[in-house]
Length: 185
Length: 182
Image 1 (tube, rainbow over the protein chains, first blue to last red):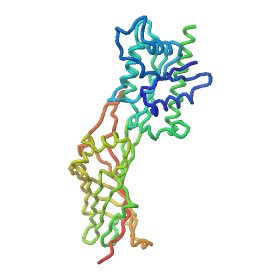
Image 2 (image 1 turned 90 degrees about the vertical axis):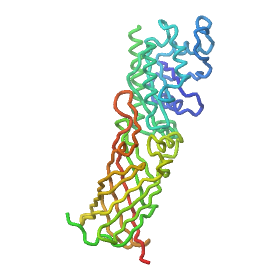
Image 3 (image 1 turned 60 degrees about the vertical axis):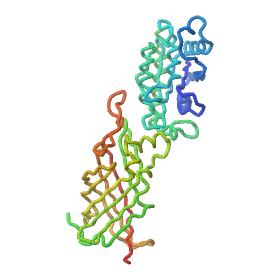
Image 4 (image 1 turned 60 degrees about the horizontal axis):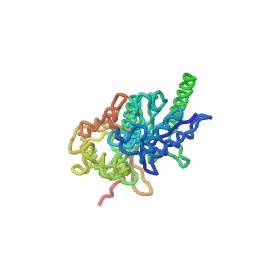
């Protein structure tokens, strides 16, 4: 079972990257999380660039999604919404609509922010976009607020309730992927 | 409830190290955010007929220091408008201290230049001789509606409800040191 992780924040010390690592650590046995780290390499979406000869990073993103059993997105919140780089990646991934690799793909969104609200609005926006694209989006959120103090030295969430909620959320995502695989078989 | 005849006498100043002004507010419907204002000055004047209480807390001393964006938002006009209203003030003329250790007061609270009457309740400890002078203690709690003072920032949560509650619980702990007669 392979989960593809996307962090909406590009900076190296990103709290959302840290949140993906914390998610990877609580995956059920037999599941692994691989972070696709090339959002910054994607050009701005341009239909003229798309088609059979899409730019290499675009093809790599679509392949990575296609080969994954599920997608887990960790997003910060920029101006009450998801970051442009993440939206751009989802826009590339969504084309062509009828056969895009996110169609029917189990997906979940989590998020961390340094404020109190843990990117809760950005998560809602990301779920809306994923649902529109046709992904099978988990109707759950994981808002990690005050993110600069949220992780312990081992990268785990300090708050036991949040840590349990994260484990439950990734567990539900994996269960949804198993169900999708069983249906396809 | 009977009122003690000589609960406190003279003038007391709050020891800034051992006094605190704390607030707590619910957010996202499920969590509680707590913070403090560290720079608090208060006096209790039990010289006259009633016991007067007066206190000032500096908004800039709020415990929200980082991230800068969070601090800036709380000090902005969405909340305290600290540039125009740097301090929070409280005054009451008639602090009631009961024999059973309970305390209550009707006072006036000023935040952001807006003043409203506030009822606060709590406990007190009578004066005792300590290594650092004659000391007493007063703890008061009140719940206020922050929007009545113009701290009315809020946002709709995606799943319904509001981001931040209107009610804020204020808790003041005053370590009172008797001012020696001159």
